[in-house]
Amino acid sequence: MRFQYAIGDVRRKPALATAALLCAMASAHGQSLMAFGDESEPPTERLRPQVRSEPLAKAGFPAVERQSIEPFLSAPQVFGPEQLNALPWIVGAAGQRSLLSKSDVVYARTPEGKGFMPSSEYSYEWNIYRNPQALKDPTSGALLGMEAAYLGRARLLKDERRELRQEKGKTLDIFVPASFEIVHAVGEIRAGDRLFRSNENTWRTLTPQAPVHGIAPTIISIYGSGIAYASKNQIIVVNQGSKQGLEPGQLMNIRQSPSLTISETDATYTALRPPPGVSGQALVFLTFDKLAYALIRESSEPVQVGDRLSSP
Image (cartoon, rainbow, N blue to C red; front, side, top):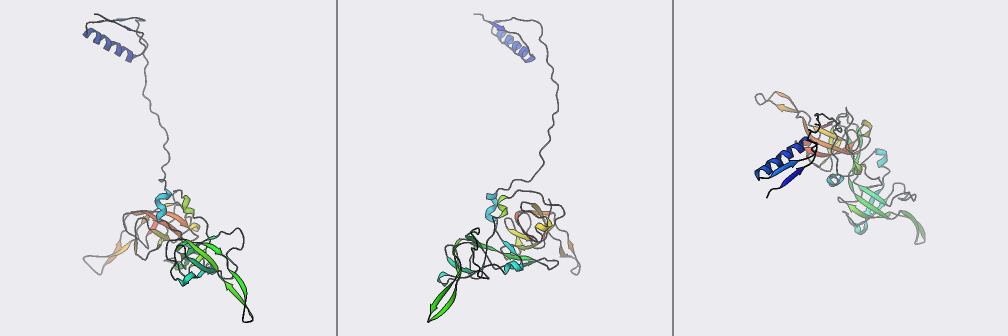
């Protein structure tokens, strides 16, 4: 049995190659192939290679996911000496307890007895801070601020007030402190700790960015610990702040400070040991006028007081 295959008009080179293949297949099986239509060669379309270029997006910093760094962040507060004197403080607790935590009721008062709720605009929740300690510039010795470690948060139950009472025929003017319930605690709270009403932390909406060139703050403290060296996911404090151009979200390189080394051949000879290059990266997340706090994102060498931050 013989079959005939009909091939229509060919308009492209690939179609001619296909027709040739069909002819070869038909011949191999003893069959005939007949073409019909325009027998003239179709026009050939020539394509020329071209180079197309598109501008690339500017290289930026990788996005910082809040969930990935929030467990390592803290909310310290920095006060001036005059501001510190106006802070309310905890005077005691129910049950005469000395170390306090979540759900405990504490008593507090303001310096001038003006109360914690002078207007309806004030929040019922106050942050609790450890009694502040001074932070000074390592070079000039100037006071940069009073650092207070964040301990938790308390909700106002009853405001402080004065009451007149009659006892043994005498009228007594009695001061009654305010009552607070501790609703959140990250550390042990005790009498003498301070209360402060602060805004939402700016680091909750960090946008990674490059710092201003020329800024090179020095690490003056490792926050929340008494250790000499810090590593990844620890917080460092530097001696520059918003007045010098530091802002939350800035990514900065960590560079070790040069140190003295003793010659192995002559113990009386000392020289500066050249510091390594970039030893890590820190993310600024909280700034004050003269101080800033940064989270160590990466570190190949131990970070210590005296190391510096610089632009990438």
